[in-house]
Length: 288
Ligand code: ADP
Ligand code: MG
Image (cartoon, rainbow, N blue to C red; front, side, top):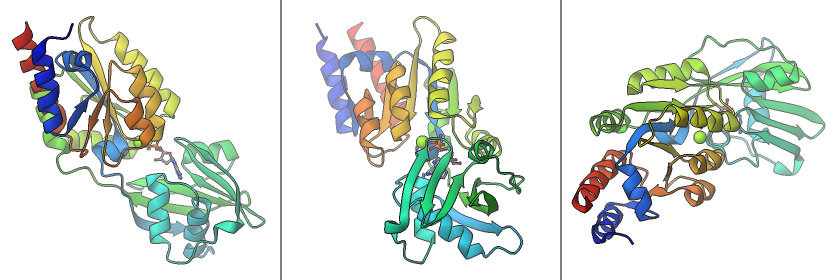
């Protein structure tokens, strides 16, 4: 049976915009020891702006952006949305074919009779294409056309304004280890991790690597301690399910993430997380 005050706790949470899908999760929240965050869209806004375009010499920068925007024609990844927004020309998607999007890597597409590849160094390596310009800050998208490197686009995302406070309060609420996982490059991840004050981070992860990292972290979490994962993306569903408590962003999060989650933050506000932990502690204490 479920103690009455648990319903009170779940009700109070729901009035605060936190949907808890069962009293067992309310109880688990009181015991969170390890909290793992996805970076893009969770700790950062997930809306990128194009900072710079660096074409190879002799290449028109508009070609680099145009090819990238066309290749992303059918994608709704935050990176794709920002590229399409920056590209001012019209995107005729009827010429975009054979699109293959690889989570945590990028996209391959045929545009007319040309082959375009847009993504990170991992994808370039897979294609056997050498790149340049990785000393830059920000997220770097490399672009190749018909097997040749034509340049890169630097995009930048912003840390959510309330993220630093939220991490501080999560630590204060007694969570021992705050970890950030991302598919983004190490340089960008390090900068974000440092600004936020997380205890550790892991970069250049593929979606399945995030699951393995969470499995390792579950092993280092004490027997009565719980692991919570907070994410927003399609690729986050497997990790959300693998964690003791999966927490999803409800406003901008994908349906797959919301479905897979145990707790949903209706307005994506990270401050709701320390609030939920403190509320669960109070509720559980009443019961005990
Ligand atoms: P995160 O783990 O931060 O949520 P993702 O796993 O979605 O990020 O993406 C990781 C990296 O993979 C991105 O930083 C980018 O380099 C590359 N990538 C993923 N999807 C795309 C795409 N549609 N177009 C270009 N690059 C992409
Ligand atoms: Mg993500």
